[in-house]
Image 1 (spheres, one colour):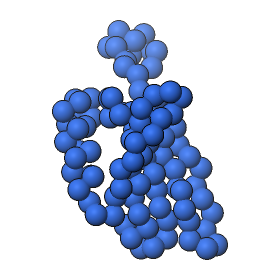
Image 2 (image 1 turned 30 degrees about the vertical axis):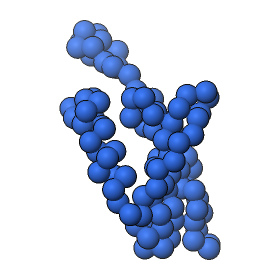
Image 3 (image 1 turned 180 degrees about the vertical axis):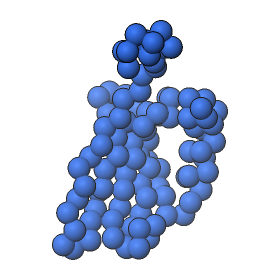
Length: 96
């Protein structure tokens, strides 16, 4: 339930940005301000570099991708995220 709380997301982002191998850059996606959190290859035994793009206002993830790979490695496909709420009535009706 913590991920739904903006204060929890902000705290996790502050902690993540304190990791020396993680860089945070500002950008825009579809006209919306975003933050790109790049986890350097040092965190992945020198194999890859990953970028998590989050909405700068809400902290919700937008996409993640493997931005650099080691020689001979195939990049993984980018993952896109979408956030929505489910109501108890929808679950009871089988809509989720």
